[in-house]
Structure formats: C-alpha cells, structure tokens
Amino acid sequence: MPRRQKGLNFYRKKRKLSSGVLKEILNWFFCIAVSILLAFVCIFAFGLKTSVIGASMEPSLYNGQEILINQFVYQISSPKRGDIVVFLPNGNHNTHYYVKRVVGLPGETVQIKDGKVYVDDVLQDGISYDKIADAGIAENPLHLDVDEYFLMGDNVNSSEDSRSGNIAGVKKDTILGKAWFKMASGDSGLGLIN
Image 1 (cartoon, one colour):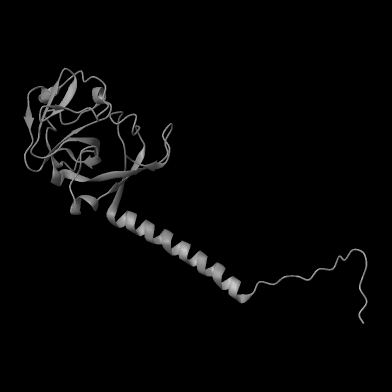
Image 2 (image 1 turned 45 degrees about the vertical axis):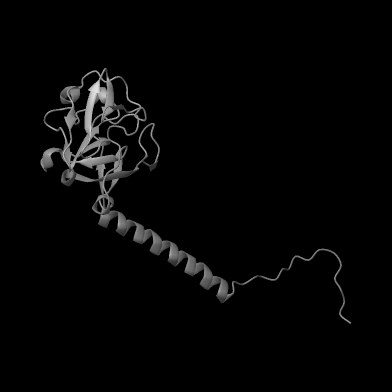
C-alpha cells in the first residue's frame, strides 16, 4: 500500500498543451488574420480615404479629420436625404474633395426662406441647421434635374455648397461616394458617420 505524504507538496506536475488545443489556438489566429486582411482589401478596393477641408461640416466632422468613403454603395443605390457625401464640384479633378450633406433629391424644388430650408414647400424640421444668413441661389425656388442633388454643409454659415452659383445642383456622376467612417480627431472620436 503506497504511503500518503502529509504536509505540503512543492512538486507539481507540469501541464503540457495538447496538440488539439494548440491547433485550435492557431486556427483562431489564422481566422482573425484573414478577416483583417479581407477588411483592408475591401476598404482599399471599394473605398477611398480623404481629409475634411475647412469647418463646413462641424460639428459632425472637423477640419483635417480623415474619413473613409464607400464608393460602391452608390453604384447599386442612390444618395438619400441626410447622407454625407463626397464629391468633386462640377467634376473638376483639379480641386479637393468636398464633403457635404444631402438636403434635396432629384426632381425636388429647394428654397431657403427666412433662414430655413424648404423642400417642395415643406419646412425641413429634421435638419438642425443654424439660421441661414445667405440663401445664395436658393433664395428663389431651385428645381433639381433628374440626376441632381442639393448639398449643404452642417455649418451652413461657413460652407460653400449648392447655394453657391459655381456648385449649384450636384450631378450624381460627380459624387464619389458616401462618407461612412471617421477617424479620431480632436474632440471627435473614431466611428461610423450618421
């Protein structure tokens, strides 16, 4: 009959990783690495990265903040009211990308009266803009063609947008895509764009 030891035992049996557990851990690392690689490929294949220039989109986006643009989404659908889009004014490839919010959709009539935005004579309550000091060309009713959008910056009194005669209605083919992800910058954190 073996004798039992009394007291403390400082000799412990070392545990070894079984090959099954080791394979499972390596499999998880492999899956995570492949997922990260696919995410980067998708972002760079279908997306674009740019920086916001100016204060026209504050407080949503800040000057110098980098954003990712989904170039694929508008190939299968159209911009919707409230989307933040990136475009080249008049298709001019020699200028920087403009970042603005969609206010008016194709076929609608946009007008700014008493510092407020009206689309088809209906006040846009869902848009939380300051009182607009300069209505620009939208002082009179502005009818959008079948492929035009009316875009404005969130900081309306510091924005060059569709109210300006040199931008006016933005054609769909000059819209590069939807801004969908913002990088951390100053007061603004990392995250999806509403």
